[in-house]
Length: 146
Image 1 (cartoon, rainbow, N blue to C red):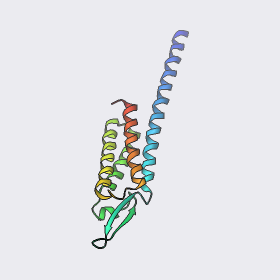
Image 2: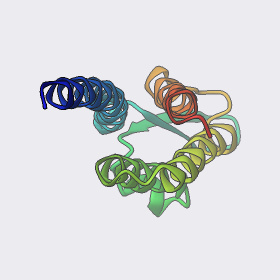
Image 3: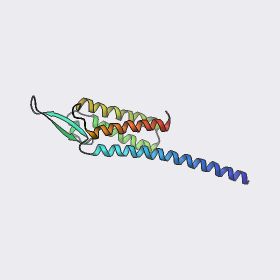
Image 4: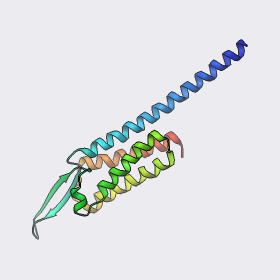
């Protein structure tokens, strides 16, 4: 009886250590997604180039959450926001494959938005958002070993 009780304690301790290790990974990925969404909320993260004449160009800066880029046909920042929020929610639900797909879509939409609309005016925050999405995808692949 004592041996079985000791074995139970060892198994329970191993299980608790494994759960703590998994929770640390999930907390890291959730906090990375939250920081990315926080950076997207800042007002100078999306640059859009406009022209008021043949040789006059000016740049306006918006948040990823702003509807102004959508009004001018730039849907990529809002798509990035939508899929980033989905990634954050799905981290809590533990859907690893769907999170991987949504994270990949975030990388694609943020990269295409930068390349199509602001190739001359890349912002630091927009670049940071893309880099954080890439880092999140890399760590997700490392943690979950797809």
